[in-house]
Image 1: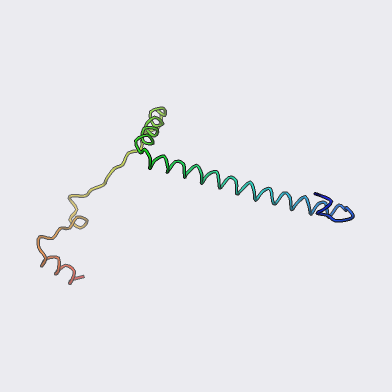
Image 2 (image 1 turned 180 degrees about the vertical axis):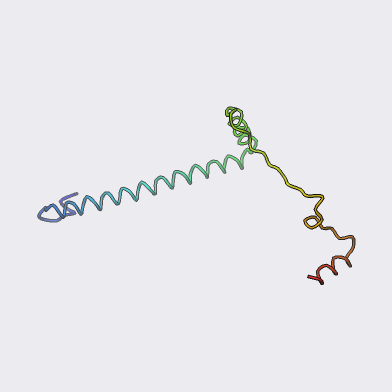
Length: 103
């Protein structure tokens, strides 16, 4: 294979070029393989979640239970009921219409 690539006399520079091209090709294959492996892992996880979401959630719960040192992630909804600017409700259509006309 090396002789076919070099075709004739073998010199140091030709050998060096061949080695660099081969290394480059191997690096490309390695990147492609890693990317493909990550994508396949994500696909299998999504496939499993579509089939049985409870199993995936129980796996997460098992992970959380095994890691007692860290806090479990929680969703917190921030509501400001006292602030009238963020939670504006209109009593009727005229109030809403006047509000939008003013803007």
